[in-house]
Length: 378
Image (cartoon, rainbow, N blue to C red):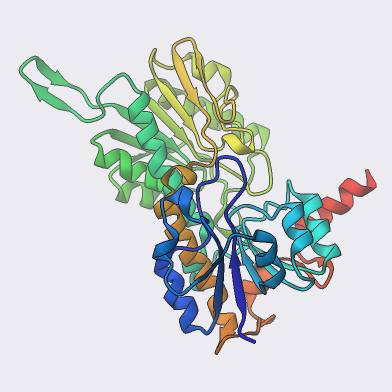
């Protein structure tokens, strides 16, 4: 029987994305796969069922789960979804196992193979599968629009009959995909932009986008393209230099994160209180604790005329394009394992071995396995 791929409507509060879009339907069909989609799965992304030509629809999510060989998800599967899946089915999505440990146990109990899109190795061959990057680009773009909409100033320079208005000054902390997209978007809006990252190798990327690179004299090159966590001494030295630039900025956008760990604190209370009245902080690390000491996830707070915004799940605010990018990531990830409608995973492939979370009733991802074992023994 040809492999059956199931897609459900996401049920997590605030989630508007969907794991499949019409643009990839024919590509899955060309692989010989059958598509089984829950009725209305794309409605929050403004994608009506009628656009999914070639797919089968069902209003019964339990029926889809009992039939599908592969379940494509955005958010982690719920306990009810796991219970309804057939043993040895495959789930692919953002699994967030570092905070969904019970989910990982339940997947093991059902012998469900799961792949976490956030674990896809950051190697050249896997760039088209890099869902973290595609969704981070959305977040970086949206962060600048939120900041511009909140700021009580123009962003670009304006020459008017009443005189010249100076452009706003943006500081983007973190030059990963989200940060670079934020820099590019702020420049397109006409801001003066500075960019900072503890990885000195990002200087060229920041400057190529027309921003000035803030050099604190501290480098924290890490593995896999990520920054390592700074020591207390390094954080102190970095803070002294950054505080000077934070104080001059009209907008600070922070994007610094260490996967599976709390976000590093980069903006402390003193730095916030040293900012200009009316300045804005948009903290993209809010969901993992925030880069700013005052950040509250999902809220906008005001402290001494400084507004601090802690957005969560920003990609869901651009659901159509975020879904389109994510669906292509999923297609590119699973495509090598499907031929003539048959599913065969090459367990010698470093992409699959790197992204697998659970397999054969065990937790295959070492860090997750260690974290769960540590929690059970404490």
